[in-house]
Amino acid sequence: MKQHERPCRHSRPASAACGPRADGTIRALAAIVAFVALAVCGASSIAGVPRVPERPQGPDSAPVQRIDGERVIGANDLARLLDATKFWRNDVRKLELRVRAHRVLLTADNPYVIVDESTVLLTSPVRSRGGELQAPIALLDSLPRDSSVNRLVFDPRADRVVVVPAGGVVGSPRVVVAEGVTRIVFPVDHPEDAVVVSRSRAHLRVRLPGYFAGVLPDSGRQGLMRSMRTLPAVSGCALEMSLASDALGFRLLRESEGRRVTLEICRAGGPAWETFAPEGPPGPRALRVVVLDPGHGGDDPGVNLAGAVEKDLALDLARRLRGEIESRIHARVVLTRDEDRRLDAQQRAEAANRAHADLVISLHFDGLPGSRSSGASAYCPPADVSATAGLLGGVGPNAIAVLPWRDVAARHAVESRALAEAVLGSLELRGLGPTRLRERLPCPLLGVHAPGLLLECATLTSPEDRARVSTPEGLDALARAITDGIEAYRRNE
Ligand SMILES: [Zn+2]
Image 1 (cartoon, rainbow, N blue to C red):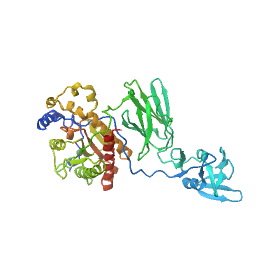
Image 2 (cartoon, rainbow, N blue to C red):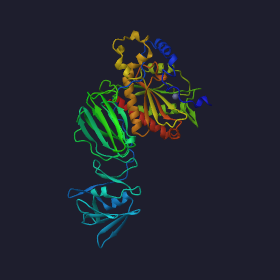
Image 3 (spheres, rainbow, N blue to C red):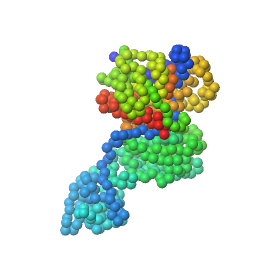
Image 4 (cartoon, helix red, strand yellow):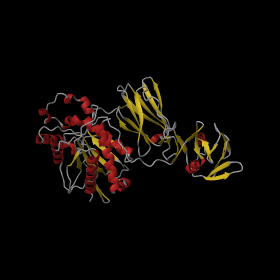
């Protein structure tokens, strides 16, 4: 039992788990698969936008109307969003909204509003239209602020008043350009939860906690930024920047005190800066054959914990993923195994190569005893190898058999890395994270001549993850998210 409960071993880096055998394995494979390159995972930084077709249920909201150019919200909507009780006094044409211990008193045709003990002067009076009072949205800034009252914010892009979710609000980004550094400052209630989900120049994506109630800069083209847009995200919001080609580094500063997140982009680079993922050629990628490799099988269950068996989950997910990919991408999908049997790495590689795979995804589920980790991890070899090694240029096919695996893996490293970024990005946007990208060569992809990655789709030692993937709905959600990522990779936008 104990050995069945060990974490998934296939995700270990080849240099660790399979290290002593790696070179020998590769050379044997290369001989068998006749000069097949041993590329494994790769990485280009270009990932398209994962689609999130089923938009999450947004927060409660109400439309904003205009009276004489002034933005107003109807008192009935205001009361509903605040969860307030209304008391109308017809003789004085006053409406009192009561929320817990608070009260807000609106008077028709009067710019003064009483909020608890304070009198607030609005820029224009409360109006009456069709028998309903209409309050200028400036009132939102003066409403009581404590945990017993819903916080409301005006979303200028949706032209609605929105109940602020637990994650808070993200305001309009501000761009400041100075001394070769472009700073994009986001007002954020909880800066500590901000994360970069894709780090290419073409698609630098940041996921921020909270509801985006800001406006984008009039011109996205400022300093090293070329454009900015919002992306659908299941939790929080996501913004994507495309950057100038001479941007060399970036860093994300989370300033809890200042309640802001600053994305700094520089021309100079250096040790204090993070680098962008390397980029492959532009334009859509051909995707005719997708090989899915359900991990483990037969007498190797992989992670086996409280009824969740990795080999079964991987196969179930692969079958669902096959349907999703075939219907949405119209690529042929080949499974390395479609039953419960054990395959070694060589058989998996041969199956992928025989099918002329355009990409390979090895499906696993993680197990990390004693850790509180959850979410997904993707493994691919370090993409930077391709940038540093001159071996890609002058190597003929006859030389491949004698190349160490690390060098050959670099052939698809950039593309595999792009795939990993796209898949992890869509998992993040669908709320199936957190996600981690590991630049290590995974064993099951040794000998595969295509871009690929090993995906630990969820962490079975996390009770929440285990419960989620133990339902058909949970596996379907994973299949949709992974397909989003594959689609984004194919579009290479
Ligand atoms: Zn595994």
